[in-house]
Every structure is written in C-alpha cells, then in structure tokens.
Amino acid sequence: MSSNNDNEEIPIIDFSIECSKKIKYACEYIGFCYLKNHGISNEFINEMFSIAKEFFIGISREEKLKYIMNDEYFGFVDLKQEVLDPPHQKIGDYKECFNFGKFQNGKPISQELPKYFEEKSKFIESFEKACHDLCMKVLQSLAISLKIEDNEEGEGKNWFSKRHGYGMKSGDNFRILHYPPITIEEGKVSEDINYNQDIRAGSHTDYGSITLLFQKEIGGLEIQHPYTKKWIQVPVVPNAILINIGDLMEFWTKGLFKSTKHRVIFNKENMNLHRYSIAYFCHAGRDVGLDPIPSEFIIGREREGEGLDESKESKERKRITAGEHLRLKQENTYKPIIINCSN
Ligand SMILES: O=C(O)CCC(=O)C(=O)O
Ligand SMILES: [Fe+2]
Image 1 (cartoon, rainbow, N blue to C red):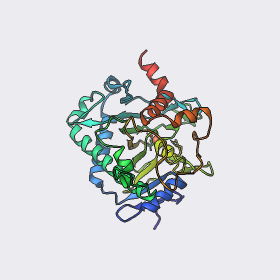
Image 2: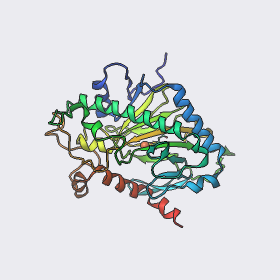
Image 3: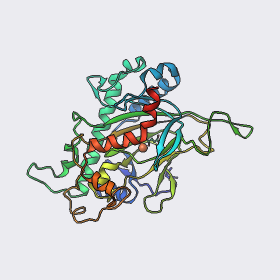
Image 4: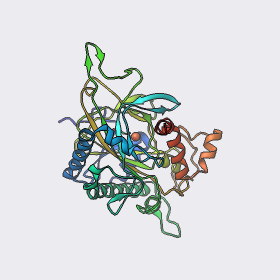
C-alpha cells in the first residue's frame, strides 16, 4: 500500500515507541517529520476542524473584521493581506486565519473572542493544552537525542521543556487557517487574484521552537529542502501530525536543526477547493536566551544556516532573546497589515 508520502523525504515516525534518534535525524536533515500515534485522538482533531470551518464559512466578513489582529498580533487576519516574503518582496497571501494566542480559564489572554467562539472556548483551550503537552514531549525527546548535559538544576532532558512552561509569557500561538478556493473560468481566474504573484501562504520559516501542523485532505504545502533548495510537496498523511523546527531551535543548535522554509501554493488539484489547517506554534518564554545548548553535538560546532552566518545582523541576533526574535520577525512580516488596520 502507498504510504501517502510519495517523496519519502519527510519521515513518518511512530511516537509510541522510542524514536528520539529518528526525530533528531529528521530535524537535521529536513527540519520536518510526521508523527503518528501521537496521543491526540482523531475525534478531538476533527471537532477542532469543524469549529474552524463553521467560523470561516458561517460568520460574515464584517463580523470577523471586528476582531482584526491587534498589536499583540492576535486575532483575525483577513484574506489577501500583503505580507513581506523575504527578502522583502510584497505578496498577497490568499488565506484568512484566526490567532488565539494563549488561553487562561477558558479565555484567550490577549484578545477578545468573537461570539461564535465563546461557547466553544473551553474546548479550544483544551485543544491548545493538548498541543502544548505534545510539544513538551517532543522537546524532551529532542533534548535526549542531543544528550543535553545535566546541570546543577538537573535540567538535562528537561532543558527545553523548562524554558517553555505553559504559564510563561511567550509567543505561543494557536492558529486556525482557511484557504478559500479560486476558480478559473474561460482560462481566467475569476477572483481578484494575481496568479503569478499571489500564493496561499508566502514562504517563511516559523519563528518559535517547534510547530505542530494539522492538515486535512487537501494538500498544497511545500518545503524548501535545506540542502538541495528544491521545493518539495508535503502530502497530507492521514492520522499524522506534521512537526517542524522553528528559528529558536535553529539558534540553540547553531543550525544543526533546520528551520526550513515552507509555503502553501495553488495547484490544479487544490485551487478549486477549500483548504483548512490548524497550527500550534510553541515558543520559549520571552526572556529565554538563544545561546547554544550544552550538548556534545553543538559545542565546538561552526554556526550554519540562513541567518546564522557571521554577518553583523546575526552577531546581534545571537545575543537576543526569544521575545526579541519574535518581535523582529512579526514586525518585518506584518508591518503592512498593521499599517492597513490603523487606516
Ligand atoms: O496551512 C499550512 O499548511 C501552513 C501554515 C503555516 O505554515 C503557518 O501558518 O506558519
Ligand atoms: Fe509556517
């Protein structure tokens, strides 16, 4: 039977058995892997997808715009916003999304919830917690694979998880996404789309430590292979969660782990279809530093990777914290949106 993963470059890893070496290899080689037997049930995930669909389809744009992204970068992001696709090319992202940020006692800390979500907020909070718990397990597995040394506080395998406490002030973000269809009539795209320039999601790396990505049925995600630089497809693998490395992990490992560029494209098979996805971005506490981790694999290693060269900018970056890195990336990506919002 087909594995549903035709390129086979992104490994599918069984998380119910010891797999830290396999995850480490995937993080070094490609920065992405699929986890199966991850402990989050299908029913739970499907329920979250249903809530997302109902929100995007059932609620008017006018209502959604009342909750537009605030200056903490949480809230609703409308279709076709201009974002800066590094190196600073303006593109129109053909997606809408809602950023919940972090929850506490059934409410997001940083922004108001649309009415539609109010009665569902306990469920959404429990989904977010399940994502955070899974991230902690993955981070432990990564710490074990990197043989992070025990210090006086006995950190060792908890080195990462201690820096990602749920209660910490951080950039943790839970996001639901909707990519509406575009249709082609008489050889022309019917929507207001510049086919050569617009994309479903422009290429980017994730800003946090690790990301969980839930895809369902409709593909379109692509990653840029860190070594060959070729764009390769990331098919939907049923019952598996996609995990990817973000910038913070690349900093801590001096580029051993790859914060791989990815994007979501229109293609013939998916452009007529609605695509939904769910992402959980796990970030370290805002004050956590980005110095290399105490690991035999990292100490003495030359820095490598995009943005990790010895240029002036990256020398400065080496000294910054998780919070400062996040702010820098958000400002560069979303400046045009914030400017639009204040008009
Ligand atoms: O929707 C997807 O599959 C990817 C979304 C993504 O990469 C992001 O929101 O950072
Ligand atoms: Fe992403």
